[in-house]
Length: 65
Image 1 (tube, rainbow, N blue to C red):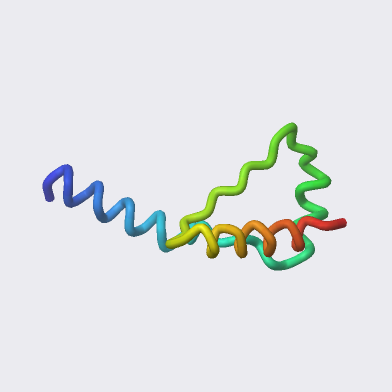
Image 2 (image 1 turned 180 degrees about the horizontal axis):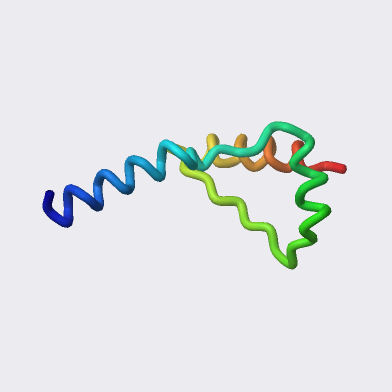
């Protein structure tokens, strides 16, 4: 396999593991509270600003204590 083929396969594998979608389960809030990060970064892959806005609202809701 060439480097590009391997790189593509690795990328596809990672995208199947981490879909870059928001957390919906409210139990994530207790995990974040336990870790106490200085910063919390949202990393989403979206196809529009509207979808990004929706994802942010979904994750904000899951993180409410």
